[in-house]
Length: 194
Image (cartoon, rainbow, N blue to C red; front, side, top):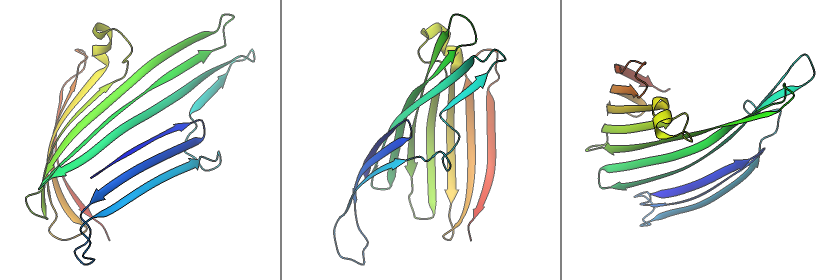
């Protein structure tokens, strides 16, 4: 069991975590505990795509978009059940300097998911999951609802030997925009690591 929190600002990022659970049967220790903290800096030459983009017009004016993101998640277990949840949010700010009167627009985003896993034996796992996403969370409810996306998932996994897995998934995707179609998906995956 454990909890981790983190965040980032400009090129800096930080994480702090505490975990506690049963240790290996070979050590004889009843509990294993870990406290970790991470502070880092994303160097422009090695980081993922930048957090802001700039486009220039022919008149030398420009438009910029800045992104902010944060999230919080937790996990716990009870006997053969595991529970995982996460909430994340952020905003996209666009600054348009291409006109005589600069314009600033902000779009708020939010998403969360909850998941429950049941593993009656080591080689079997059954998972149910609910995902919700809003691509315009700051708008009034009547205007934001068409930007909501909901997904229900039911998955079963069989791991006969380590590093080999067979997964069967059923998913129901429900965009709340009436102009979009509901999707029903089913797939079988085989994962093999070597």
